[in-house]
Length: 270
Length: 261
Image (cartoon, rainbow over all chains, first blue to last red; front, side, top):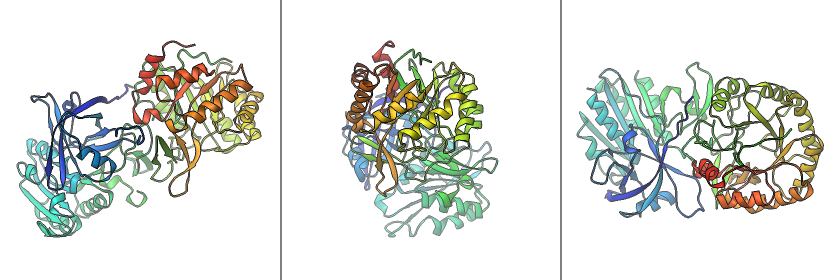
């Protein structure tokens, strides 16, 4: 049994730009960017020594080659301790990072029709996923949801790989007013999608899993959960699942996830 | 039975995942997460909260149970060439005895650690002595018993004396301090915030019991911390919460601290 030990680096901020109310950070990530697969996260450390829990972020896009070497992008909401700190980074600043971490989205062997569902800022991993699916000959339809237009992530980038992109916002500032559950059943039916991929907060992912199952589609959901150590040591990110044998288990989002088959998560216990 | 450690930097119980997730080069030993007879899912989320320079944890002993541990985890750990110390716990003496017997016979187990933890959070000296007396007869001659006596000052010396009188071959002066989550659930506080308390507990036990091998945990984060504990009489240090913040701490401190004492 070989040990899986991820790579720890001091990532340097190359660029930071505003995307609506969000920030997109580009960081050098030698060794991490090359191993990345869509659905992976990186685990970051806050400075100062007072707050010790690490913070996990979806990897958005990676660039294995570039003028500064391998780099990756994160999309950050400038809220809370970690988000505010990251949003105030400037080029040249360093961020302690471990990655890539977690089980990525499993991709189909055959070309199939897929629906990708992004919950606000957590749409970040869906852009590279859409690109990979498209390379495999899949037809990709995308649904992006957010409270307001300013909190939407990935809209422009994902268009390059998607047959269609639908947007809903809670306040109707762009697209239809509403949420994922209001439009997903019709989208799956209209596109005859066989697989639904999604990433976001637990309530939205529960909606996606429930709707996919009712529609006869497979779902893979990337759960946004606190991952205090990010590497499987602390047992602080429990996810109740049903194993392949049907037996209930509690697994770690950081190691056995963060991407799960939607029909395997015991949502009522999460 | 002496512990016979090759290096004085160990990984503490409950902070090394399954062991697979951690770089262990040069480390003197890995104490596994606590294993119970049957699998336990652990506590509901949130299990972990931040406290200044510390971690609040209410985990509830998540583990795969003895059978799964012996079949799926222990063989891989033994192959890593790191001495494996298995932490065990049970509410009932018959369960504790069965755990001790089967762990003690498993190939590659260097020692067994038992005592203060989520299953027995604040024992009396008599309760801890009972635990030691239950486990000890089940272990083969070559597998020493380490009693974890916590680090709650005062009281730690009484627990330490009771455990040694009952036959423990070494003591772990470490673990978290009794604390509470924001919602009031019982928790343990660990991390650099508790290092001075752990140092006080170590010094008191060392003074009371000059000959007993002592493993010192609680807030050890840097090589300086480890050297202070060793200078204060610890046989080895146990690294715990530091790994959650930086998983490379184990191998790094092992390299910085050098040879066994």
